[in-house]
Amino acid sequence: MQANWPPNARIILHIDMDAFYAAVEELDQPEYRGKPLVVGADPKGGHGRGVVSTANYPARKFGIHSAMPISQAYKRCPHAIFVRGRYARYSEISTQVMDILKSFSPIIQQISIDEAFLDATGATNLYGPPQYIARKIKDAIRSQTGLTGSVGVAANKFIAKVASDLEKPDGLTVCLPGSEQTFLAPLPIRKLWGVGEKTAEKLNKLGMKTIGDIANVEQGHLMHMFGKWGLHLWQLSRGIDSRAVEQFTTRKSISEETTFEEDVMDYAFVEKTLFRIADRLSRSMQRKNLKGRTVTLKLRWQGFETHTRSKTLNEYVNDAETLRSIAVRQFRAMSREGRRVRLVGIGVSQLNTVGGEQLSLFGHQQSPQNEKLESLLSELKAKFGDAVITRAALMESKIRKPGSSKNEDSKN
Ligand code: TTP
Ligand code: MG
Image 1 (tube, rainbow, N blue to C red):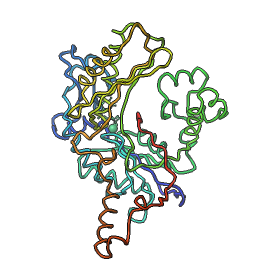
Image 2: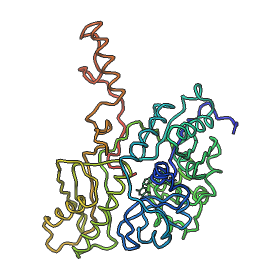
Image 3: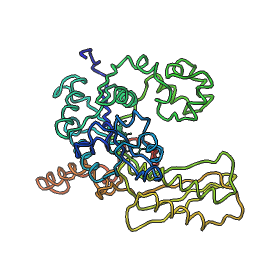
Image 4: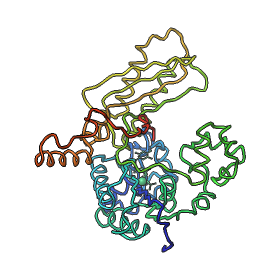
């Protein structure tokens, strides 16, 4: 535990709470503890529709997992306790956890309701070496919320994220800078960001099963197969990831889409697909604690011509039913004339947190730094007069930093 962290390496932590919704239920209902517990839709004696949000670890022993149809979960373990989600409560505990993390470092990027990255590079003077910081964070979460979280510590985000998952639940996994490749090599390729079932299959067929297998092929080979993304994969497989922990995500919209294997003329099938997309999108928004006001249908016809239709509502939504009905209505309103559909998707923008407070990330509100700057400016102006200081952006000859390109439609 005491091995040295190179002084020039970043210290990135990834924290992910264990079986989060289920753990909160066990916290609030002591009689649930230690028994198989499933949070999700009503199983209705095995005939329920909807899916599992999460299951505690005893229930996972029966093969139950997030996103599994609730009817299947019921079949696997009918004697499990099944409860509906209480999102307001999860959100409340999530805020507590994030506040604890912020007390260790202000550079925090919340990824979902129970998960965040923390850049603790500047925190060693206060809290000691990286492994100690991680331990203290885990202890603080446990003592202040009664829950456990798993922490990964590394010199970059990708490795930290992989590490936090390795020893769940209640894990603490450290990957020392310099040992990234050895750390990753034996792990399955699905652990690489962006590698889904299909890509994994494709790579498996080519004999690549572990991350080490990818690291060992020629960089050009992967680029030939997957273009620029191949290069990205290859870099990840070697533990290279220079992305910063972004305090304020640049997300402005969230979307899900499907490209059909073959262009489709069966519009009922397209509508069914929209149903599935709405479900997926709704779940993803709920996980990320997001609601939005503008719902957009995206449709690409055979031949690549693409159209979008948006509807802005008076309230913020993230439920599948609303997303579904808007998307279908818009689809029916399009002039279709027997054309084949290549892709459909639904996006939601004008996002907001579930609690209703406007996210500073979306531009309307000032970031804390902005607020600090504003109050500093007013103080200085009060002391020295209006002309003394102004924001660079308001000066006539603006000096601009090189802009960074922002992914406004991130899916992750
Ligand atoms: P996860 O962190 O993916 O899962 P988890 O915390 O339940 O379990 P783990 O110990 O493996 O981290 O997701 C956090 C919460 O988000 C989870 O408790 C419930 C919710 N969620 C869904 O509602 N649907 C889903 O498909 C997933 C993956 C999560
Ligand atoms: Mg979790």
